[in-house]
Amino acid sequence: MLSVLRDRAYRHLFAAQIVALVGAGLATVALGLLAYDIAGADAGSVLGTALAIKMLAYVLIAPAVGAVADRLPRRALLVGADLIRAGTALVLPFVDQVWQVYLLIFLLQAASAAFMPAFQTAIADVLCDERDYTRALSLSRLAYDLETMLSPALAAVLLSAMSYNWLFTGTVAGFLASAALVVSVALPSPRPAGRRTGALYARATAGSRRFLAVPRLRALLALDLVVAAAGAVVLVNTVVYVRDHLGRPAGDVALALGAYGTGSMAVALALPRLLARVSDRAVMLRGALLTAVVFAGLAAITAAGEGGWRWPALLGAWAAFGAASSMVLTPAGRLIRRSSGPAERTELFAAQFSLSHGCWLLTYPLAGWLGAAAGLQAAVVALATVACAAGVLAARTWPTHDPRPVPHLHTDLVAGHPHLSDAVPVTGGWRHSHDPVLDALHR
Image 1 (cartoon, rainbow, N blue to C red):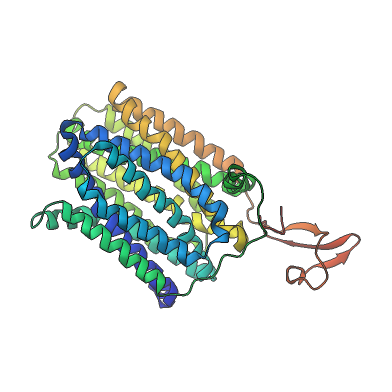
Image 2: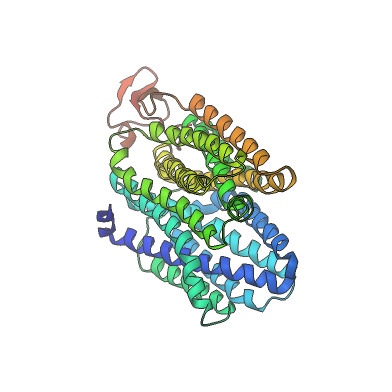
């Protein structure tokens, strides 16, 4: 898997991803402590609102950036987003009002919403070989999982020697290092398919409309909802399961979250070889099926009133949730790249980023508010229902033999156009077949 790091441009981009993730992880810990300093016992409410603001920024800003990304130098866009994130983190230690926290969180996450789709497109353009790109997706999944596990530990070590405000300094350093690494490599320029016209809203929603026009991408959105249902249970209710339902010590919360990350990493390591033999559809739909099975087991754990078996069973369920999520999320970039031309790629990555976080915006309240109001079992049943319905929808939406060549006719291309290299002239145009793709030549 590490052979892909021989590519200098990707190696620098991957390093930029790692340092930015570490910086963001430190900010997450510091933000919780800052909220407690400002709001005291209401810190949970402040953080919950900040999380909702984060999701809203992702849902609203990513499509707007995708609408204009082909008009902007890619490296300037990435570096500008990193500098905005660094500047915002630099200001955070000096706020003393809750509304200031909300404003800066929106600015920080809006910059992240601009950065991520352009960054994902850059990697897809840099690594042309499908096998290398698959390895890069697996490494990216590993980086996210390792950050989730290691950043809190690093923050704990730093907090033993300094105040939490200094953690924001680490965040600033991470984003500045990311910007420097992006500057150090040449990136492929965006390739516009032609100037899009119309109101900003129409341009911003064009990516989502294109995304939903492709069956495999509609299935991907349904699978994102499956992942969000499982992830919401883990991220929102782990502490409730460990502390209240099982009566375990606080340290076991980290063990449970670590089990989730371990399951995800194990699958991410295995997927490059597996995807060389098995289709994306088979892997991703089996991830949805595994999620449904784990929800059934979690319902049994939740219903059980006592028993020493519940703690190891919960660890196993969390590891299986992580494995299933990785089976869905890791190949997602392959679907987007396979379904688009270079000019449309950022637009589709932005649409996927926005739509997938819209799924989380739905499942977070279900896991938190329903769990608090009606109990854990009600939340598990509701989210299991969402996951199963979304999994069935994905299986029905995604064609069984996908991808497969689709014969079609080009009527508006001239002889000698590069795309017609394997086409044959027929009455009215040129006919050939290839895997379905949505780009400027195929509407």
